Length: 130
Length: 97
Image 1 (cartoon, rainbow over the protein chains, first blue to last red):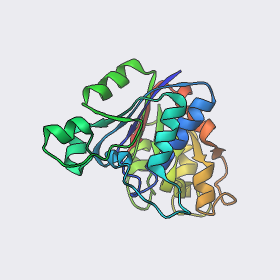
Image 2 (image 1 turned 135 degrees about the horizontal axis):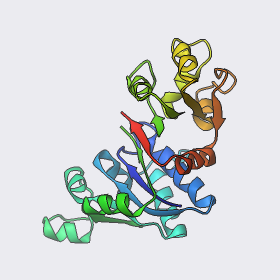
Image 3 (image 1 turned 90 degrees about the horizontal axis):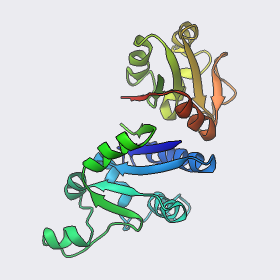
Image 4 (image 1 turned 90 degrees about the vertical axis):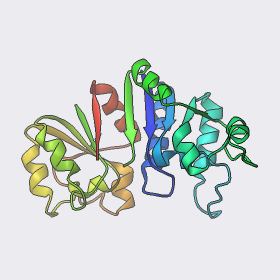
């Protein structure tokens, strides 16, 4: 079955980001396909590579990046939500005259159409967060 | 429909909203698992719902809160794989706010 996942919460708010990650991992382990993971609202904070949690804590951003690399996941960050929260890739840096980028590996910045498409293409869309 | 509840019944009305729909399955995750604690004020709601709803609770979240041995009778404990199975089983799902 094809799943799409929507993450609406940052990695340090409650537990939604963890739940979404564990859900994605379990779905892949069962042989399902993840069509796309879409990060919206505060969920875009899952995509900054500058995150530095304490060493004995899980690294939520790196964990997503690793899962994406291992399973060729399409992880999309909402552009408007990203701009508001300072999540920047090469293109956004140039377009908005910023001096740095911080988008973590495995993520890409795109528009809300990608969420709509995921809702249409996937058999199930599961929402995580507030 | 699969109703996913991630907030405590003592904090938000998410469980009540789901119960008002009348039927389906309820999956309690994150702080939502507080509704599944035996002896809690929400126990009566869960018991009353069991005729119309199948009620599930996520194992990892019960364990994280030290409540895995205090689950109300009739609530089925599932792991993340079970969560995936429930989403696949029900054609629609709703994460209540």
